[in-house]
Image (cartoon, rainbow, N blue to C red; front, side, top):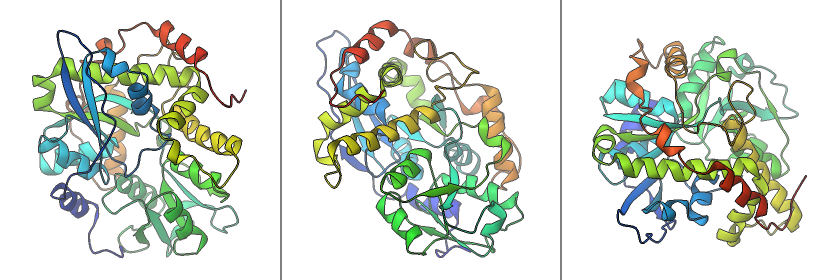
Length: 377
């Protein structure tokens, strides 16, 4: 049962009418080029962390500026609020879990499509304290489970995992909103919840704080699962294709830069946001901890997969019908969808080629030459 009386769909509807997210100052100065444009990116996260290098590296390295596009980033309280910003015209691009748009299109007929994949393997998982006697998902029956919020795109994943293990998510467990970071960690260590359902970099941050965790066994279908995508309304896809292409090109460049040298991305985050540096540990440890969040994101982005070319020869943002079909399969299993939609209707690949049209070698060279305070080998 939920401590709140709302289920995931009700949470989505409520968030769709909620206020907009906070404007984060990631604006960049427009380049003096003949064709200028601007765009707002809505990120479904309450704070910007080192785990989003495709945003802060693009900004700090001037990739959007060089391409003549001024970008602002909006922080939103989860994927549902990102959709609200998109459909109200207050954002042009959203970054959300793909489950969010599948259900929004099916349940509310929202005209939103994915325009690029970001994280190409499953990032969500269920973890417990390392000393917990719980060793399987079936062991969660009757337990309290913490999620970031009751309107989170994590819900479909959690429901699928529970149902395939014989647990009714509406009756057999209590699901509580605990946020992430310190609040989630405290909820677990104090016994408020018995397990957490978060994403890879969020768990890395908790372990960095000295809380050892144990992952419960995953299902085979999780290996081929988009976990984060960039989305836009059909109207924006038609009316501002070149701007969207430039936005995605900056993100692709930042991804190449980060994959080439994660420590350089960590240093960029420190340079841009020095107040976020953890003062409770020595600088080397703080840097190592932030670097672990970036490496967790790179894992989500599939940079180590043998099934796709390694950066910088990778086609960032590419999507396939097979991957979207796999996503729908698990939504049907979880009871979130009664039947599948045409997976080809959920995304467009129109921007992929143009977004990857740049000097990849120059990006890698810039990363290799970037000065860092600590450079773990």
